[in-house]
Length: 473
Length: 112
Image 1 (cartoon, chains in turn cyan, green):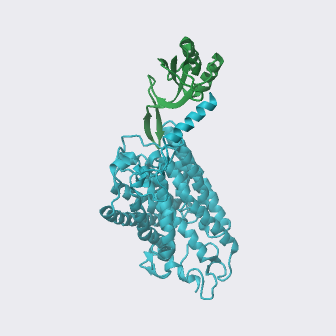
Image 2: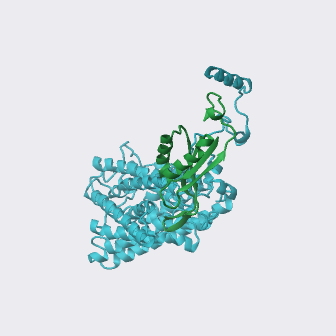
C-alpha cells in the first residue's frame, strides 16, 4: 500500500514516502483542530444574528452538521473525495476506502504516509472542511426549517454535492490539475473557494428559494438579537481560518506562513471595505458590518491564500468586503429570504476570490503578465461549481420537500422554533419559574400538564409561615 | 400614601437615585422598560436594512412615599432626571390604599 491509492491536494513539499514528517504532521493536527473550532464559531456568528427565539435552533443546525458529517465522513466521505478510483472525474468510489479501509495502516501495520503525513491525519483535517461547508448553508434557512429534515439534508448534500466537489477539485477530478481544463492553465483553489464557499453559497440560495420566506420577511424587523455573539463568532472564525488556509499549505513552512499573512491581510482589508461602503451608504460603520466584512475577506482569500502576494491580498480583500456589503441587500429586491446572507457573503466573496486569481495569482495572473488563461480557467471552475451545486441541491431539497417537508408549522414559527422544535429557550434572565414536571421520563404528554412529585402543600406551608411570623415579630 | 412612578432615561438612574437618597428616601424599585413619547423611536441599520425602533430603552423607577412628601419627591426626580433633551421621560403619582412590609407584617405608613 502506497500513497498512490489516494490522490491528495497540491503539496509544495515532496518528501520521502516512508519517513514521517513530524513538523507537517503536528501542524496538520493543529490545523484540523482549528478548522473544527470554526463550526462552533459559525454557530455563534449565526446564532447572534437570529432573533432571540431562534438562537438555539440556529446553533443546533451547525452542531447537527458536526454530528452527521462527523460520522458519514469516515464511512464513505473520505473515499468519495479522495479514492483513486474516480468515477468520470466527478466522485471517488465510495467503497474503495469505505469505513477508512486501507487508509489508516498498511498490511505491515504501519501508518500509511503521503508526503510524510499519515493519511489518517489528513482524514481528520478534511472532515472538518466538510462539516463547516454544510453548516454554512444553514444561515439561509433561519427560524423555519424542520430539524430532522435539516439533518437528512446535511448527509445527502455532503454525499452528493460536497464530496464530489472535493474530488473534482482536490481529489484529482475534473476541476483539478489532472482534469481537462488544466491544459489551459492549472485551476487554483487553494483551500476551498469552489468546494466550500461557492458550493455552500449556491446551496443556500437554492434552499432559500425552495423553503420560501419567513413570516413577516421584508415587513417585520428581524434584527440580530446579540451582536457581541456575532463579533465573538467572527473573531473565532478568523482564528480557526488559519487552520483552513495555512493548514492547506500541507506543510509547516514558508508557504503556510504566506497563506497565514495573506489570510490576515485580506481579511483586515475586507473589514475596512465593508465599513467604508456602510459609512458612505448608510452613514454608520457598524459592528455587524465589521464582523461580516471579516467573514467576506476570509472567504475571498480562501482560494487564493497560497497563490497571491500580501500586496495582492489587499485589493482582493477590500473589493470582497465592498462587493458583499452591496450584495446583502439584493434579497429584499428579489424577495428570497437568505436570512443571514450566506449568498451575499459566501457566494459573492467566493466567486470574487476564485475569479480574482485570474488577475492576482503570482506568476500566472493577468496582472503578473500571465495572460488571460488563468482568468478563463478560474471562471470555468467557478461556473461549474455554481451549476453543479445548484442542480444537486435543488434535486435533494425538492425530494425532501415532497417527503419529509421543510417548514415547521407557522404557529410554531411565530412562537419560536427553539420552544416549538427543541423545547428549550436560549435565555432565562429572571431565574425562571414553574416547577419540575417529571424526571427521566419526559414524554411529550408529561411535560405541559403532568403532576409533579407528591408534596404535601396546605398544612406544612401554613405552619412554616406562622413560625416565621412568630419568630420575627 | 402615594406611589410615584417615573419613566426616565437609563443613564439618569444613578443621578435620580442619589438625589432621592439625599432627600431621605430609603428604598425604591427599578425595572428595565422600553417606550416612547413625543420623541418617537430611533433608527438602526443592520447590513444595510434600516429598522425603526419605536420602543427605546427606559428605566421605570417606583417609590412609595407619604402623602406630604409626594410633590417634593416628584420635583426631586424631575430635577435629577432632566437633561433638557427629548425623551427625558415622565413622572406620575397614584394613591395607594395600603402597604405591608413582608418581613414584619407591618401595615400602612410604618411599612414605607
